[in-house]
Length: 189
Image (cartoon, rainbow, N blue to C red; front, top):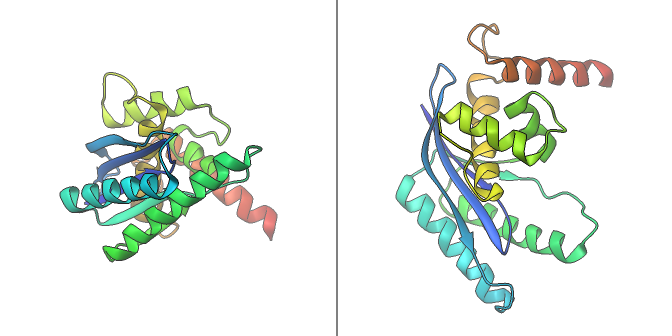
């Protein structure tokens, strides 16, 4: 079993989700939450709050690995800066705990969870709930996104790695994701 902490970085809302991924690729919810900081608070204090929050989750749930959403360019420079700063905190906390860390793009996570890299937040939330056997998608979307990151990493880094066995036992979304990855690799050659 692999326990993964997924982090959807943000200054106002930083989603954190912990899942256990078993060898048969099933996932179960361990913890989900959002670290919140007020927008009118000084930046250094907000970053400290995110750092403490992530540190607390690592200490309490003892993950084996950390998955962080890769920061991508957005039109709003202020938003991307805050996301990048929170991402840096997440990476530093993982390193401090000597945990392996991976960065996953939003489209990679969407493809892993839904089978389609252009899925919207509602589709991701619905599939996260289905995968984890929850009655509804975790709210806010940052929480569901953090769980999606953890699931994606567990499937990609564990049971669905390139050297994993045949596709028997994979979910339809996992099969679609694996096929999409093969297609992208073939186009690069």
